Amino acid sequence: MKMRQLRGFILLTLAVLAAARPKAGPEQKCKSGPVDLVFLIDSSRSVRPHEFETMRKFMIDILATLDIGLNATRVGVVQYSSQVRSEFSLKTHAKLETMVKGINEIIPLAQGTMTGLAIKYVMNNAFTAEAGDRPKVPNVVVIVTDGRPQDRVAEVAAEAREKGIEIYAVGVARADMTSLRAMASPPFEDHVFLVESFDLIHQFGLQFQDKLCGMDLCLESDHGCEHICESSPGSFHCLCLPGYTLNDDGKTCAAIDLCAEGKHDCEQICVSSPGSFTCDCNKGYKLNDDKKTCSTIDLCAEGKHDCEQICLSAPGVFTCDCNKGFKLNKDKKTCTNMDLCNTVEHGCEHQCVSTPGSYYCICPEGQLLQEDGKSCGTCKSANIDLVLLIDGSKSVRPQNFELVKKFVNQVVDSLDVSTHGTRVGLVQYSSRVRTEFPLNMYHTADEIKAAVMKVDYMEKGTMTGLALKHMVENSFSEAEGARPASRNIPRIGLVFTDGRSQDDITEFAKKAKEAGITMYAVGVGKAVEDELREIASEPVEKHFYYTTDFTAISTIAENLKLNVCPEESQGEIEVKDPCACESLVEFQQATMSSLEQLTQKLSGMTARLEQLENQLLSRK
Image (tube, rainbow, N blue to C red; front, side, top):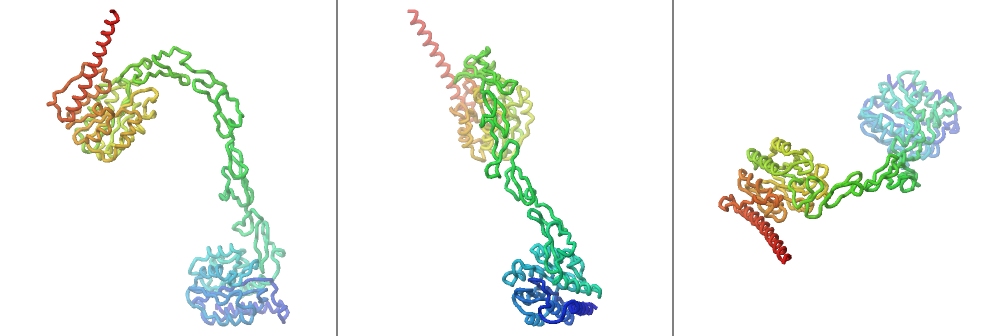
């Protein structure tokens, strides 16, 4: 049935052509102008030999109506099944006779139906300069198939159409209409044909003849193009003005928004116009000469402000500020002197330092500011910033960790904790570091001691170097409660450990001392003496403690205050029995500490005797 329809179609086409044109020579051929036409024919196994012969005759009869020539209509033929084979290219034949001979020599492939593969081949190979394709000459493909494609056709056909190839899809018998529409160019009513009945064959014959040889449809039809209609043999397609792109309906146009598509190089603002753009800048910025980048409008630098002292610039705006010792008035422009050291009774014993709207007292080098914030003294244990680093590694054991917490609280009991006096922070470390509480969290000894007893034991490794790094970079920062270095408040770090560090301590032990932190090292059990000495400040003997047993750390806590402020502990010096020492190291430390304090007392007595002697001589 199918092939009878196709034969009828061909006979009808010939009849129509014969009726429409006078018989005779080449001058009656179709004068459509130059066209590059490729027949893409289905030679799958479903096309029987006699049906393929009918298809072969169909092509020959169509070619007989065309003006064949290298400067007129060029024709190529490609057949496909599971593979694709070019029978001859656009430049192979310049005459109808040799072209017909080439068609008659085609041997069907007789395999599957890979239509998508065939369209891709035609797009990439048939319509190339090497194959005879001419620039600015319409490219037309006539696909003839009898079945459903076995691969995807929509995407590759769309790509071919985007490259300007006009596609006619001719289906025979069981051909799939959805696939035909997916392949063909719009409008579908002009490019899709399904040969199933006599009427459709007749319609196809007339329409196809008109399309290749007929009228200018842009002039003689209602094409519906919004901007531009461009004719091609027997058809037309719509184009858009510069700056617009064709919509999916193939007729209307939409402005190309290069800004929305990110196809611009504006630094800040892209202002779109159809197919183009200009750049602009945010408020407070101005467009540079390159018309792309922006620069800040600095009103301060340009002198466009009325600040009395300091102008602070922001893009396109400014605010006023005042020099140190002055405050900004309500007009936000002028300033008032706020050097309180020169205007109030500050009461500083040594020196008053003004700050905007306030002041503070400082002491000479070697003396410390007392708790009243005004007087100075040679030592004041109640006015320090103390951070304790306690070892929470698994070697400590839970019961010993409780003894460590009691040790911490024993140290706290020896200090005068308050907001303006001593501040205490606690850091626990193992394989990681955890701030239990910073310097500015608690302001009484009872609060600190309660917080210490709630600390959970971490276990795991011993990363003493990491803990020292954390202390230097975080614990003694003003954000965590350390008072400014200009206040001369002593910063003391106390490291408590029971074993060798699993990382390097050298770098941050050194950096701690360089930062002005007085370092104490307390070791228990398997703590390494060399590491403790490296952590401790000079003189090492005054800042380094060791005991073999956790139960003895309370003794260290008692002695610790002697080194914080030796003058305050006069009369409390105890020379311990060397036999009672639990280790030679502890004996050495206790002895050296006692000798140093005795030396201090003797020095004081010597000075006093010299003073009395001078007084006696002056009376003589």
